[in-house]
Length: 98
Image (cartoon, rainbow, N blue to C red; front, side):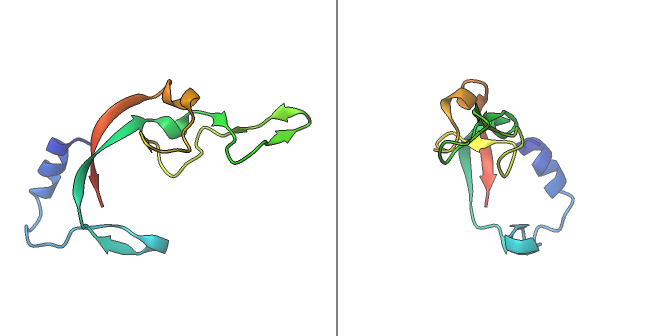
């Protein structure tokens, strides 16, 4: 979704309605800020070496699965996204609602 599409959706609602975002353990939180965020598109859909130490099984280095991570995209300053994934991902600016 892009900003224009979001605006079109929001125009359908009463402008005094509260805006919420997904919260912890199925709850909801109020939207508290809006900013731009640089992201690596689909970074968490790319297999990567397993982080957090040497992970091997029968002498083979394990990879984290392609869906490893909390979402499809990673922040450009995410220290857990290895350079091998960064080179396969496109960097874009996005609107971050939180």
